[in-house]
Amino acid sequence: MSQTPAVPADSAPEKRLDGASASPEKRDFIRQIVREDLAQGRHRSVRTRFPPEPNGYLHIGHAKAICLDFGIAAEFGGACNLRLDDTNPAKEDPEFVAAIQDDVRWLGFDWANLRHASDYFEVLYLAAEKLVQQGDAFVCDLSAEQVRQYRGTLTEPGRNSPWRDRSPAENLDLLRRMRAGEFPDGARTLRARIDMASGNINLRDPALYRIKHVEHQNTGNAWPIYPMYDFAHALSDAIEGITHSLCTLEFEDHRPLYDWCVDKVDLAGHPALLQPLLDKGLPLEAARPRQIEFSRLNINFTVMSKRKLTQLVLEGLVEGWDDPRMYTLQGLRRRGYTPASLRLLVDRVGISKQNSVIDFSVLEGCLREDLDASAPRRMAVVDPLRLVLTNLPEGHEETLTFSNHPKDETQGTRQIPFSRELWIEREDFAELPPKGFKRLVPGGEVRLRGAGIIRCDEVIKDTNGTITELRGWLDPDSRPGMSGANRKVKGTIHWVSATGGVAAEIRLFDRLFSVPRPDDESEGKSYRDYLNPDSRRVVTGYVEPAAALAAPEQSFQFERTGYFVADRRDHTADRPVFNRSVTLRDTWAAQA
Ligand code: ATP
Ligand code: MG
Image (cartoon, rainbow, N blue to C red; front, side, top):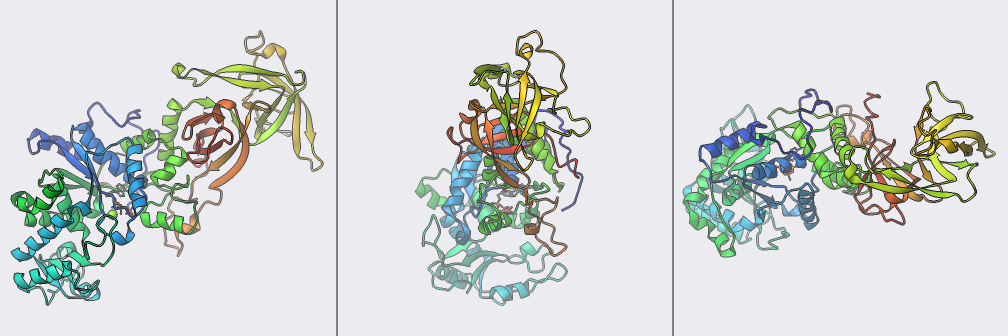
């Protein structure tokens, strides 16, 4: 992975949040290819697919593939299928299938057809018999270890399997017996008969089928053999009439095999192979697909392989797949990332064949940009310190009107209770202020956001010397609408009524890893050694009632504090729970 410079958050060519553009087809090389293909009349319409393997939850890298596959179909008036690549039943689970569908919809997309590679098992098997009859595939009795020995290396050609020249009739008999479940796991494979001397190792007689007596989540125990990825993927694309099969760069070396499978089977020329699907009533569009590769999304400070994300969950290093610190789509969602912010990220990063690592601040910047424009403002105190305004009568309560968004009047206003006793942020008071401190100090004045100017008269401490309460005076002439309301004071702080506010659990999340390259194993370490011990801190704070009443997943800017979301699972109006999605400013940049 090359370390090309990351995109700085403020280098956005355009500010837009929906991923759409005036001339989408000009945006990248893939869209240019699609546009040209349509202009040349090569296809009636564009068909793409997003083909996840249901062996884990989708991560932020998948968001790039989803936005590209579904985005291109939508922009060019085509269709995109969601296809679960379920050819490896041992690792696959219906829980993952459900989460994948949820994630794609959440990102704002919908599929033309929901398919599974397993829907095509009959067709794939007929295609395998066809290859055998053509002399293009053979049943090989070498063990996995022997296959490795025969394969050769990058610099040395491989050797032909001793079973390579079996007759088509013998191969067909053996394949049928494999299919009938006669042989144990690993005893034989069906291999393509291509070229053991090829410079491309993928073409050295790759396996097409292996024996695995494993129950499958869709097909049960119907199949003791399962197709290999390259074979299943290429033919599934052809079956669905995929015009542009978009995938990441690691598949570039597989493209010759992909093309070989498509051409040798030639579904379009042999429609009888598709009969099992017609029997099932599946609509067909068989066509010759073209594979195009693009670079993966990589972001520093994250891990993004399903294997590592799975380990984090299984080892209890996080609290589950949707832990708000996880880089799964479920985790990001629970953290408060919005679909628009992720689409903006994909748009900003762009599509190319150049590998690069995006700086984490670009991701955070996209969320800030979306929420700054859309999230209502609220007041919340995360680290509360009591302030009593002694010149207000005991039990004094009133209601103040605040606008919900400084730049968006359509968001309207809300009522906030104001009272004699308030919570303010502990860090907004300093007994011995550092230089340049603009907030509350003993004897000093500060503006309470939207309520008036106060003076601190008294600091009350417990026996340990910890400050437990401030007592102060509210200037009656500085109240909203009064003559002194605009009098100049240095600072403004936020507050929540101690009597009208609501106690809330506030989860202060930060990056899960404390180093830019948690995947770096060069010093004998693993990403486990780089977990940020401060990535989750839970405190009890106070929020204004309009925040407590939020629906789960509603995002807010808590003024001066950050962007927060009402937790998707745990938040209720009686027991509010908020997750910090992102701070207002990039606090890591200063440290770097
Ligand atoms: P991982 O390697 O992270 O475990 P995967 O590639 O095995 O993921 P699949 O379920 O095979 O996961 O991926 C489905 C699709 O998503 C593929 O087309 C793949 O190319 C694409 N994809 C996976 N990771 C990324 C990424 N980081 N950036 C862009 N696309 C990705
Ligand atoms: Mg994969």
